Image (cartoon, rainbow, N blue to C red; front, side):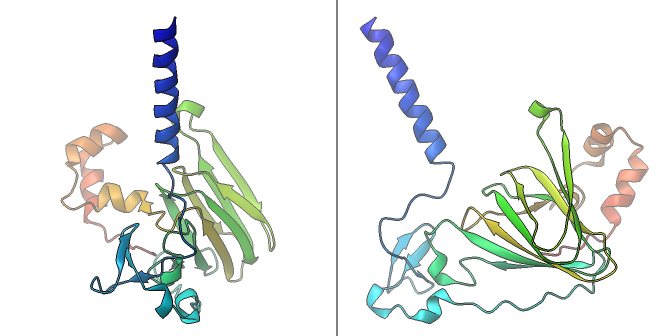
Amino acid sequence: MKSSFVISLVALLALASSVASAYDPSPLQDFCVALKDNKLGVFVNGEFCKDPKLVKAEDFFYHVTPGNTSNPLGSQVTPVAVTEIPGLNTLGISLARVDFAPYGLNPPHIHPRGTELLIVIEGTLLVGFVASNQNNNTLFTKVLNKGDVFVFPIGQIHFQLNVGHDNAVAIAGLSSQNPGVITIANALFKSNPLISPDVLAKAFQVDKKIIDSLQKQSWYDNN
């Protein structure tokens, strides 16, 4: 009985540890401003930390400008992560500004390391995400207007489409300093090297010629 209890306790602790490690670790200092010069800092969370005595207000500041939507997707994502604000390092958050031309699309993609909270600043967006196989790939969609907020759970395929006649702007908050992004179409048809057309033709149950055509197409990246 005692042995069974110990085994259960160890399993529970292992599970708790695995869940905790799935997200950015909590910082153990006020801040750790990222520094490129490794001669002057300590390595934390993939970045070197600047000496706190040398930290300035500018390390926590960044001015975001509108993105250029003159592209095939009609949208542009402008990230604000540790690369743009060194002071974000170890704080476990980041954001992005998303600009849309009329009928512009932020195509289906996932963030493998972060949940996204989107707020519409201007315009009208059709947004949605697809749940995993476990939840029957259910599609959740909603039309958002100025001031509306929507959540995309971590790792779920999601998208945003400007359904209005005017430009639209949204701000996305993400629960990681480095949430990552995988654009579905680019990953499948523009991988390096290319995925075997036989694999994709079988997976999508289409003629191989269709896959060949898709892989020859130029896929735009709006990030």
